[in-house]
Image 1 (cartoon, rainbow, N blue to C red):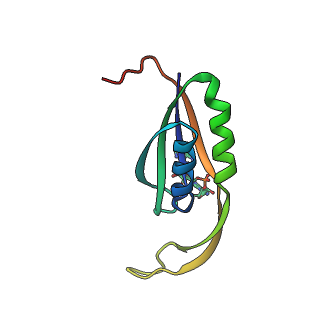
Image 2 (tube, protein in one colour):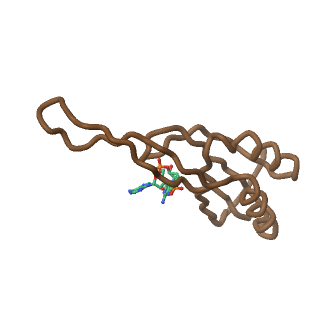
Length: 108
Ligand code: 2BA
């Protein structure tokens, strides 16, 4: 068994969770925050049999799409309490995925 941790954009979460549930995957949804943009994203925990991992990846690839986001980045302070913010385009991926081996899985 594998634990798939998928960090996704909030915009894709509702459709992804619905599609995964529809396809028979069990999902836990956590609200999370990206360290770089400091804005909300969603972390999904999905426990899945080894042979189902490829099917799961296909669903994630189908629903989650990369987006270019314009964000304000603050420069180094010029003088005390004053700094300049400037717009910056950044490409956020459709999903960041970690796949871990599960030693033991129990539902009690
Ligand atoms: P954030 O940390 O808010 O990052 C959002 C996007 O900003 C990233 O998209 C990437 O394009 C850019 N970015 C992140 N760190 C950067 C850096 N040090 N320098 C330049 N650009 C940077 P993604 O790579 O698609 O990541 C989307 C979200 O997935 C991240 O949100 C973070 O929450 C998570 N993530 C990505 N890689 C991770 C990792 N290795 N470990 C844990 N979480 C990760």
